[in-house]
Length: 163
Image (cartoon, rainbow, N blue to C red):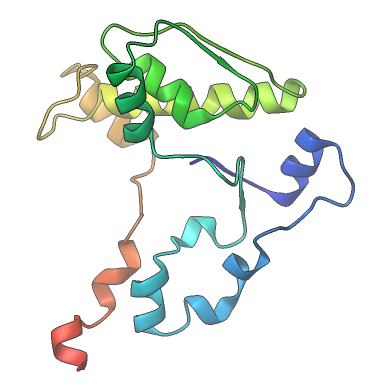
């Protein structure tokens, strides 16, 4: 899920002050100790940011919907990046049309989809991505920082050691 700064989100939704509906995710107590880091899994990069859409589903959920209901095209009223990525990733790719609030929203949405495609072009697997291009592996590794979803969990003791 793309993360944006509070200022960017305010620019997108044009509602000063920007609503912070999930402010507890920025609570420092949730990542201070090792058990909290492991339980909440808030990556370092997301601790000062807000998600673009609060109630977005995982891309796999959208892939299942597209496949199970044989959906031919999608009109999205909220600009879900995971739905856009699912339309691109599905076989065959589905046309995707969304309503964006302004140019800032277009920029964030297109950057998220472009970054997803670039990462997939460099992902050898397993399983290999359907977009994989061998020459892109080194380019992606050089220009896109690695995803650090659970990077801080490595220094936390495992559950068996702490109990």
